[in-house]
Image (cartoon, rainbow, N blue to C red; front, side, top):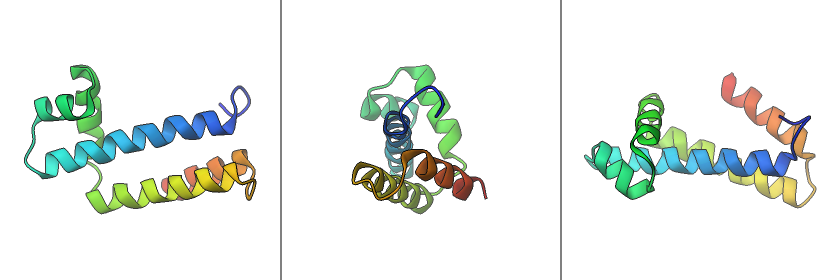
Amino acid sequence: LLEQQYALSIAGRVVRQCRLRLRARETLDRGGQKNDVIRDLKVAPFVADKIIGQVRHFSLPDLQAIYRRLLDIDDAMKTSQVPGDLALETLVAALAG
C-alpha cells in the first residue's frame, strides 16, 4: 500500500477502522447486540458482522491502547517527527508481535 498511496491516507483509514472496533466493543460490553452496533456505528449489517467477529479477540483496554498509539503516530507523521512509512511499518510490527 505504501508504494501506491500516501502514508497519511492509509493511517486515516486505519484510525477509522480502529475507532469503529473500539465503539463496537463498547456497545457489546454494555450488553448491546448486533442491531445496536449497526445503529451506533451507522454501518450495514454485513459490516457489523465483520466488526463484531474481529472485536471478540480484543478487550476494551487493548483497543483503547491501540487507538492511542494510532493517534500518537498520526500526530508524529503530521508534525514530521517520523516519516509516515516508518511509522506505519513500526505500528504493524508492534501489533503483530
